[in-house]
Image (cartoon, rainbow, N blue to C red):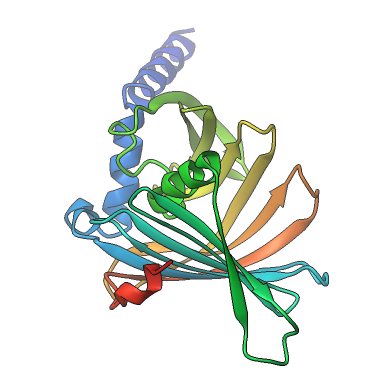
Length: 241
């Protein structure tokens, strides 16, 4: 009986300690184990290259260049040998649509992005790398949901919401790394990404380098490979309309 009481008390104490942490504590641990907040705070830009492969004709590659000081972002999507270029800079947003066949020098028709499309790209500027990067400045609210098991690992779930979107983020309790990112968009689409490997950039920040990606929009399981260079030498022409 005495042993049972002691066990119950010990469990209660461990549970209260586990939940004594806040969502911010979980975020801080992630930043610590991926390079440290001082490194993250000194990031001014990045380039990101991703390949989305599922064995379908519609597999595609993405090339992103982003600059924080002037809130600029260029995102190229290459699918079926055609490259579409999305961009935002200042109050402008545009899409360059390739014209003609792929066996000739590509010419583009430039169209304006609507305000919703521009806002989405500006949201992605930091969130595509780290969903909770400067989340408070954007008016997002972070809530610690609790502990559970995911893919055989104990994880802590944090919900991050604001401006019509919701992230459910699952962090490995042993390593502090992000295991799953689930994004619910205003359109109703839900995107889930499970991270299977991490790499360390030359700058010193660790990031997810391999993952599986699913979307309720097309219901395919896609394998994603990612390479990020932080504080890269990005030409100003990358953000030219």
